[in-house]
Image 1 (cartoon, protein in one colour):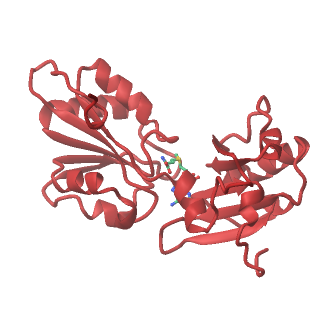
Image 2: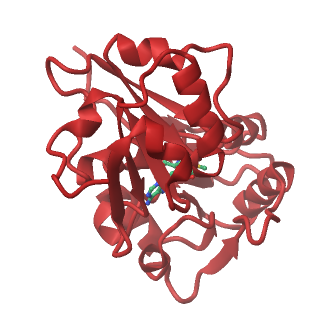
Length: 255
Ligand SMILES: C[S@@+](CC[C@H](N)C(=O)[O-])C[C@H]1O[C@@H](n2cnc3c(N)ncnc32)[C@H](O)[C@@H]1O
């Protein structure tokens, strides 16, 4: 008989034969309320926490005062390089028993957690993945948008809008087939994204929502249509939702 599923954990011994673990923890999209209990417990006993910029201050406040706190997030365009972060994690794992690598949302959803997992495994450092609540699903949810509403959407596609949309993929066609499009990191490229989607065959009337700073006190939701995306006054971090579900429960006062 199969046992209960256990967290993904790669237990090996590192070069100095000391058992250590690096925990790749998803902090969720907002404050402590969107952190998992597992993440909360690990933060309480962390000896060192390496975190990104998008992690909420209230979550960071859970780090014990005696623990080392290392911010590797992007500030004014400059972030620690991924190679540097990888090397840092390996070196910390040799010196501490509980190293927490804390990332906004879920560590594997556009969080580069996969790269860190592989590098740590190669260095024979044990890793435990602690999934987090991703903004890709939580942001639409808190705005009252059910991304796979029965009868309206039979799937959801999470994509990066960082460099505009990949012209090789026909996102507009997917939306036509009832797949909700959720775009992360798309605010700065919103003009290009709107152009690609309309160019791909979506109408300007396609329902669209932008959820800024979801799950935080600064949360702001815009319900509108694709045709108005380019001219919206919105700022990151935000999630863009495109498809029929974005009209569900839309207040009459929306833009
Ligand atoms: C580098 S990606 C990291 C995603 C993260 N790993 C996750 O699962 O939510 C950063 C992008 O996630 C989205 N994001 C993260 N937190 C958010 C929040 N609280 N509200 C809205 N969007 C958020 C934004 O699109 C932002 O540009």
